[in-house]
Length: 356
Image (cartoon, rainbow, N blue to C red; front, side, top):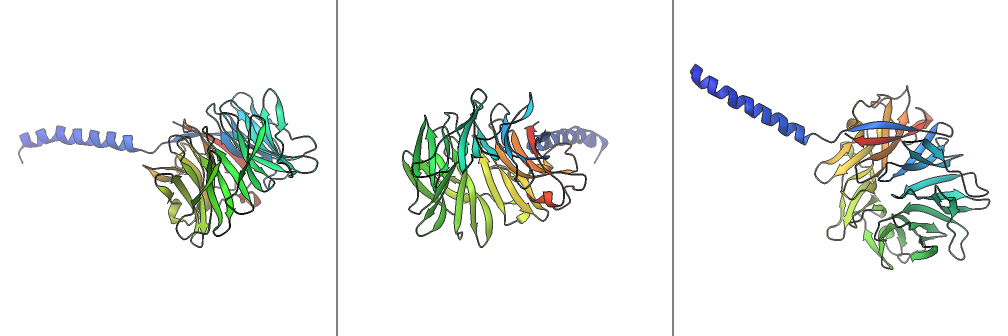
C-alpha cells in the first residue's frame, strides 16, 4: 500500500473510531449519584416509597424492627419521625403519593391499625371492617385511596369508606398496590392452587397465576398502564415476574444466575426495582425490557466502598430510586451482605439514587 492510500485511510479510520466511541457512550447504562437519608432511632432505617417530589417514607428503629417509628424524608428538613397512633409504640410508612399523603401501619393499645398521615392533620386511624379489630395499610394512590388488609381480607379505604375486596375463594387476601385507576394487586388464598397473585378492578378479583412449575405467587405493585410486578415461588426458587393482560405472567430473571429475586415496584416507564441473590447475599437491582437486570451497586458513581445496596423498593417516574443496605467500615461490596447483615456488619441504612 502506498503512502497516498494510507493517508486516505487514516481519516476514515479516525471517523470510524469516533463513531464507535459515540455509539458506546450512547449505549452506556444509566448511572446514579447516592444520598444517605440517615436514621433517627437506633441508627437504622428501612425505606418503602418515593413520590415525584423526591419525598420518601419508611421506618426507623432497631435493625431487627423493634422500637420502629414511621418516617417522612425530604431534602429540606431531612428525616421526620411521624410517631404512632394513640396507645402505640410501633409504626411504619409503606407508601406516599404525589400530594405527600402517607399510608402505613401502627399499633394501638390493643391491635394493629392502618393510618393515613398528612402534614396538616398528622396521623389518622383509617378504621377496620365490621367484625375485625385490626388492619394494615400498604399503598396509596394520587386520589388518596389506601389499600391493605383488615382482619383476613384485602380492603380499600376511599372517601371515608372501607370496602372489602374479597378473596379468590380461600379464607384470606391482602392488597399491596394500587394505581390511579383504582386497580389493586396483592395475593389471596385459592381452594385448589394455594396462594396466588391477584388484580382487582371494578369490583372483581382475578387470579394472575404463578410462573410455570411454581406453587405460590404474590403481586406487589401496579403502574397506571396496568402492568404488575411481584414474586413467584416454587421448588426452583423465588423469581420476579412482570404481568400484563396481553402477555400474561413472565419471569424477569435474576442477578448472576441466582435462583432468587423479588420485584417490589414498577414505574410508568416500565422500570422495575427489587432485590436479587448473588454469591454475596442480596443486591438491589434495576430491570428494564431493553437492558435486562443490573446490579445497582455497579451503577452508582463513586459509591462508598463500605456501602452495599441490598434491596431497592420504590422508583418514581423520574427514575429516582430508594434503596436500603448496610454501611459499615467492616463491610465492602466483596463481602457477604443480606437483609440480615446487621447481625455482623452494621446497621441498615436508606439511600436515594438519583439518575445522572
